Image 1 (spheres, rainbow, N blue to C red):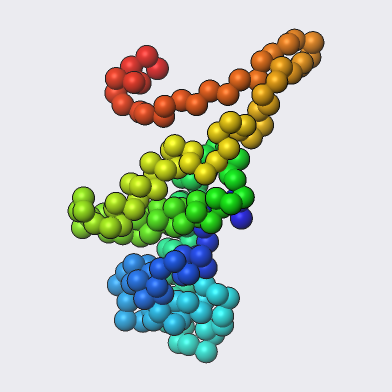
Image 2 (image 1 turned 90 degrees about the vertical axis):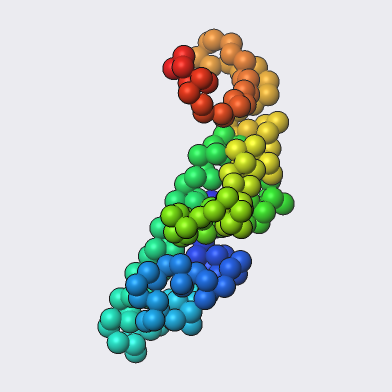
Length: 172
């Protein structure tokens, strides 16, 4: 697990098993109980359950794992080139959990004042800004001149505004 990533276990500690199982189980909500959902995520054994129950729970956990993976990937894009401060790891993980929770939401029912949407927007803005990261010395770049194959280069850090609008992208 990379620094600042979230996991299904962390999602369970942040949100309830009831909420997550409902968001992940789709049409199998009656079969996928919060207790079974939690058990599988925490590495428990549900082999004593009927096969259709095992399949439904495993499918629901796969939905959660996909959302977690997508959220971690989004975080990696926003924070590429940064080193996450050790004391900000849990904070960043919580924001990535908000991204994953948003991915589990039925987007056709989202409203601008929905807490899941608001938290998602806040998480995106925070991650885009690089908050909680070492902006003064990004990963892989130094702050002094380096010599490479006989050529003197300056290792310079440039932070783009990262605003992608039609007008900003016209020259590309």
